[in-house]
Image (cartoon, rainbow, N blue to C red; front, side, top):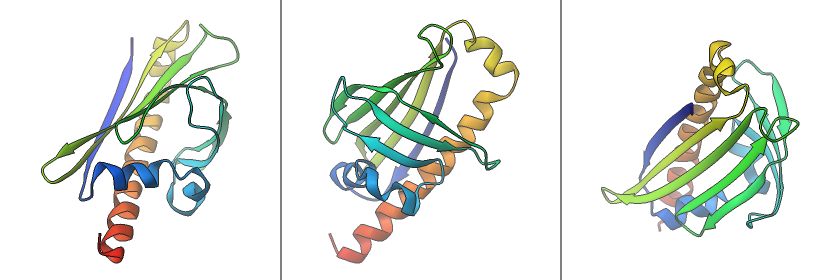
Amino acid sequence: MPRIDSEVQIDASPEEVWNVLMDFKAYADWNPFIIFNGGLAEPGERLDLRLKQPSGKSFSIIPFVTEFVENEKFEWLGSMCVTGIFDGRHTFELEEHDGGTLLKQYETFRGLLAFPMGWIGTYKKMMNGFESMNEALKKRVEETFATSGT
């Protein structure tokens, strides 16, 4: 199964990173990749996501939340039209690391189009989105919590 991975070290606690990551209403203020995130972060619930590629093109997905472990892991599963055509399991993991937090963001793909999507450059575009989001999250968290003094 194809998978893309991205990670970033953030100089803040997992709780501080988690609070920014779970504040869906503020995504439009800082997140260049997921420009809208609505819905409930509870297993079985659906999210309403609007993703923006670095090229400026955007698209919507409505995945199901599959895992939620406060301050540690948040995951959803999305499908293109029908399950089994092109599915992506997107995961955020937070780990205490070197006095801060290591954020891992990755997605595993499956379905009939999983390999062809790589051939047309889909995964490279998504990786660019992951990396831009990670850097923006790092900046948002570090500026927010450095300013507040916590």
